[in-house]
Figure 1 (cartoon, one colour):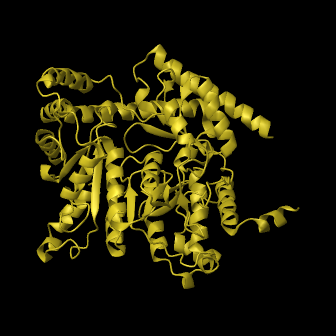
Figure 2: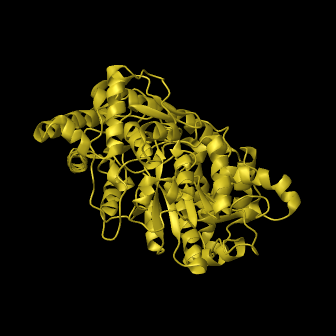
Figure 3: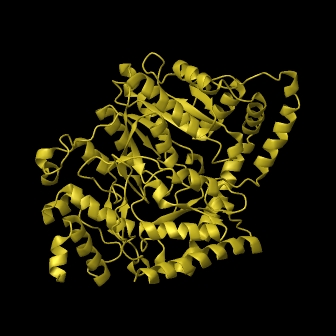
Length: 546
């Protein structure tokens, strides 16, 4: 088959992607140059918006272009340092599902996601104390605030025998809720303790929300980021809902522009949609789970404009928003308001004067947070920030309290007491400020080491906060990535493969929190072992594939 015949047999979005890729490598498109907008590119090439978004998404996954919120796509700063283009890999999805395999794409049919059994095994490996802990999303535990927390816990636990059957019943200790509300308010997120419901971490909070949705609305269509955290998929699946994949970018998080196109798509306006096998392609969602800050695993962060656009989009289409703010407090840019901040600001203005949430043009919204990612996962403490009045939503406080009580009755009062004292003293706030700086150093150290050792073989988008680093390996197939993951396990290093997150191209999620940024032999040993085995595995897999 000739090269021209091969080119003609490719899908049209891949033809566009290869054309742009050649222009970048040949220097016809230079670093920093802005590409035509999605609509302009579609008009120039005669392609549908779907195809253009898929092509741009593939180039972004290869590190050749970068999505800049509200200004479009630009060529990456140095094409010499860009990794090779990712191979187009189609993974086999579980029965009755369709998987979108290109980041930032709009599929011909709505893509549904499900979680698979390997996630359980991978999490077990990530938590194995005999392995280098680069897999699980655990923060630095050797911190002054953590040590003080357990001193306080021992003190309060010593008095627990006076009331051995006591529970901290929902909505949780009033002292703890007041301490959290004060901390949030002083951090720029005005909050009242009556709006908080304490739960056992963000995962339980997510399950409570989805369980109430199922009880009152039946099986719902829940939009999720793809790639995105697999624990979200587990909660959706356990509660009998359907997860709908939404395109997400490394630098800018959820693709709000693509979401708007999917929600507003008109079949008559798009040849690609007219040819789709789905009779009702226009996307409909009941709820959307979004991570505006510290996206897991890609590290992106929504711009202020995208946050505002998302709120108006959700209000217009009647979509409930679930804001996952588990990493928000560790954001390196703390100036960006949370979605719940924007809703409160809007509702307290012109919307409040008109009197109802519907009239104010704001969607239903719940924010969930956790101390597991910022302080210590062993606290098993998180909270839901409920903004809906009891008489307006099944997700109001009284109904959620009953659901929380039924799922576990309550928590240990001594832990609530210790946490409330730590937070009220200001030690927790100081801890968060300190760890932001610490994690920024460790992430940069990890990226520098991987770049110097592996060069073009890795794609390392900068994180917007927290301590998780996406290590893209675009030269590998899905099968090769699985081999690499197990090779690292045999070498005593736990990571998490991108396949668990429904990533479109090969990669690993790494945890920089566990890498001490002080010059120590142990830290250097872990990094050196990681890169040594990565280089060996990448070289071996590449040779065996040729």
